[in-house]
Length: 361
Image 1: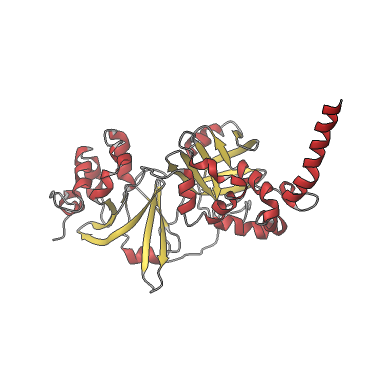
Image 2: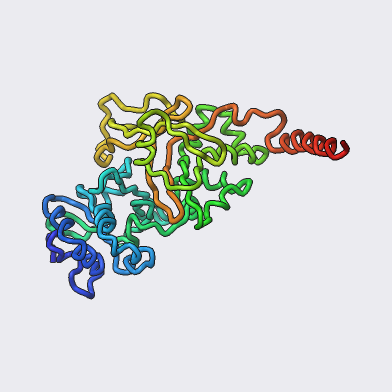
């Protein structure tokens, strides 16, 4: 039987239904969600299965009515997105009914050609386990997690996110990543996506080559430290507010970094390592693209602009902002000799000489 999503019938209002817990949460949070769903046609609902609501981190927030309402909005999209449409999309992100919050799709192709689709919302990666449940005013996909309730540390998120492989592997050098699993600290990590490291090869090929060499692990660590602030979760909203009267000084692990964070009012396409001009002004149209993603955020650093690809990726010990560039300059890797070896063979002996001289005096 096909029901109207807003009626609750297809959400499992029977106790043995696969979405009964989801229905209960909607019912207990008031009628705002159902009212909103009834106003639109051709909507898509990403509905967490019953087991997803039993996770300890999810149970802990169910009494926070305001937060629950925001979480529910993350699961509601005002577009009709059957699975085959999602798989075909070239721009795999879509706005939810929660302001400035998108869902991001990743489609993996298995050895036999079958597709598996994962969806990220509010820092949570969920798999679509049952797709294309029809309703009179839309479609439902059953997922295995609740969006917006993080269960991974910053380290776990880096390890498992398919778009952050390079940042994760580079961070494994010089033991940079180890700290990111500490549950007692709060981190804000401006993490370059994989394409950012590839774009760096075009902008500064010698720099990019050195950063991926073992001899330059020390320099790579220093550059990653510029991307990491410790002590609090700096959401995009906080960073925009901080930048209203000029630049915002971030206390990163390496040094104080001055950035300007702005809300973007036009459609922005991925930049090539911080290009100044990233908006499209031609009449290009891609019929496979989900509705163009206007808005978002731009970070300005060192006279370059970077797009925030995925803002506010929540983790249990902090927050990640995925960016389309690397905060690096050529001077960061200008050394005599070969990277970290030159540091050991040149700097360290000089330090020891100074210490011995002082001891003899």
